[in-house]
Length: 149
Image (tube, rainbow, N blue to C red; front, side, top):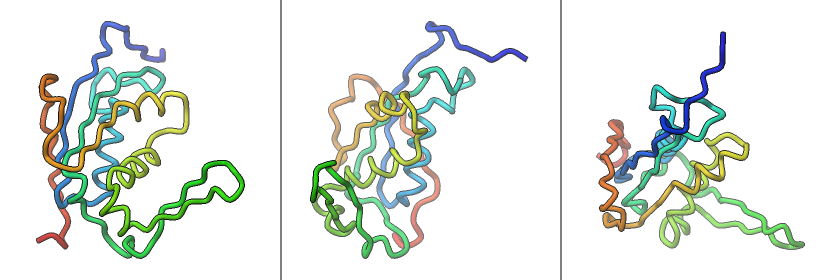
C-alpha cells in the first residue's frame, strides 16, 4: 500500500473560530490540536502541513476542572535559577492565553511541524478578534463544563 501524499494544491488552510466560554480546558485543547493538524480533512497526511488556522475567543472564561486552581504551570528559561512557577488561578486572571497555548502545545506532536502548526493558533481574551476579513467558520464544542451550569 502506498503512502498518501497530498499535492501542494490540495493543501488549504481554512480558518476556524472557537468560543471558549465555559468549555473545559482539555476538551478545547484537543479540538484545537485536531484542527491545527488538519485531521478533520480527508486529505490529512501526518507528514504534510495540511493544518488550519484556529482562533480562540473568550479565553478568560475557560473552565478549569478538578484541582487545577491549586496547581502551578512550570517553565524554565534555560538559565541558572530560571525556573518560573505560576499558579493557574493567577494565570487565569493575568494571562489566560498562556494556559490554553501550553495545553494545545502538549497535544501536538513533538516534531518540526508542531512549531508551524502552533503558530497558526491565535488566542484572544475577549470576544473580539482582528481576523474577521478571513471569514472564519464557527467550530462548536458541544460539551461544556457541568460546573458552569
